Image (tube, rainbow, N blue to C red; front, side, top):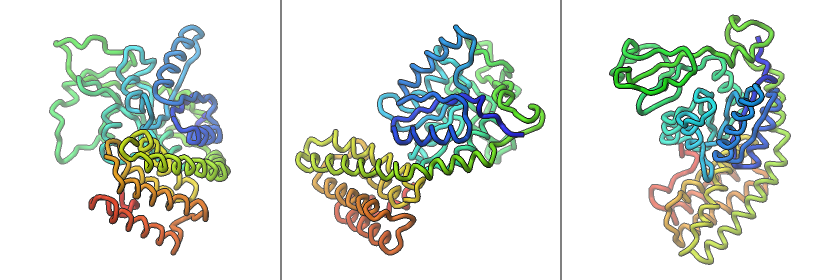
Length: 364
């Protein structure tokens, strides 16, 4: 049985225009029938409100699934997710949400989990990885859990017993709910934990070439290949985007060097570009770009005090990024790649803090 994704409606929330185009192309290649696009979490919330009003007036459904970036200005992915799960105006608190981000450290993963994310995909992502998370979301939705401190998919994926059981309340102490209606006011005479076991209507909607009872389905292998080709065809666009980003990096670095005492805006711009660089290079065969982007992101974290040493360290990163793209160095770059990473390591040792003097490839 194959899923008919032409019946699927997906909301893409991503502040990078280039990454939005990548995600849009992948979704179209996979055959997703309806795409909504938002530039950030604030736009996504406004759009969800509007779609909910339209659906109430016309009787047609809105969004089935959300794919959202974690790191965005104004309202980020976590803030949007919390609104979706908790706010009274949320059109569907049970909607599946796939978080996608180049930030894969433990804190980011735990914050996403605790906000109620359904699945998490790290950048740079593969077509297979993203499609697998989508299929997992459709095939095996987890029960939702409501507690005074959490509402979202059950954070424990496995039903088997664990050696170090930390849950105080057992299932017999919970209220089991089989409808999507909000539980209303949680009175003192009601249990503090509610388990929502809802009918898998999304799977029913998308099942094609078989009945719902036929078991799990998958995405057609030919569509996956089309999606891979879609990304491959955007390599020239990626090179153009990086070239434009390099110009912005050089300009921001120059302004920061001219006025290091007041360069917070420039450092923020450099940090945001680095975040995008680290999340996209591996998709187009440029893992060195991911390494340089990740390292540059780490050394320009918000709150990093400006200094002459930091300005020099940023320059070393920008020079490395320029070299990778000037020579179109793919893979590990062989001897040239090793020399570039060695130069970056030397710059970290010279200008960075001792704890920063490490190869960025070793970063999480």
